[in-house]
Length: 131
Image (tube, rainbow, N blue to C red):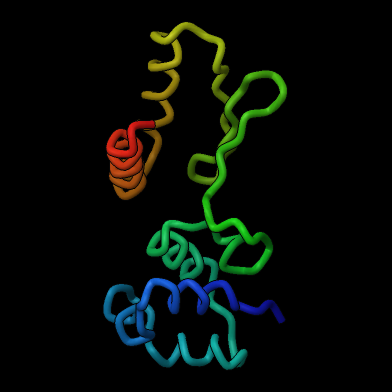
């Protein structure tokens, strides 16, 4: 069985109690307790909800990586590759900025409202960090 050590490590690091997590999500304290004791595992829907809540990847929660950040990556052909609603997409970083903006807007339009909001908050955070 997969261990959810990173989930409980993240809870601890952020000072979030299991009760607070249950209050903030649609996940019961009983489920959280069962996961901690290894009695059961969260469903894919719950894992996605937890990853969204903690702004981390599902792979991190499952212990498949030590890096909590969700990944977009650039391959050797100057293309950004990522996943949008379960579908891979690629944007060439050497294209003209207007074309890049057009590609971005097409991708943005395909996102759920929740993911659009997350993306906007991420952009604001980057701007505030001066990146």
